[in-house]
Length: 103
Image (cartoon, rainbow, N blue to C red; front, side, top):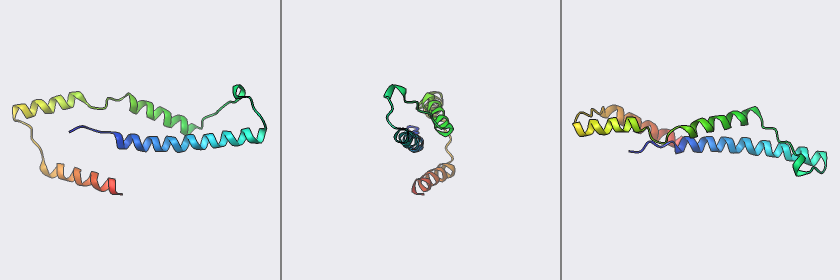
């Protein structure tokens, strides 16, 4: 089983896209109101929320996609026949994840 953070990445991308779009619309409004500007003279200021979203994305992107040490430990337990799975906990987590996807 691969541990996947694509859902989390999708949510962050969606939030960053909304923040970036809002900043772009604000900057475009300033440019139109102020008249013609040279592309070299344009200054874009990011909102604090946009800056924070970029920092969060950098932290998430710096994390490994798969936690290799944990996976290797589980593989060793499987090979040794000592992997203990709590079926009730596993079922609860599967149902919870499914319900979160629906809502």
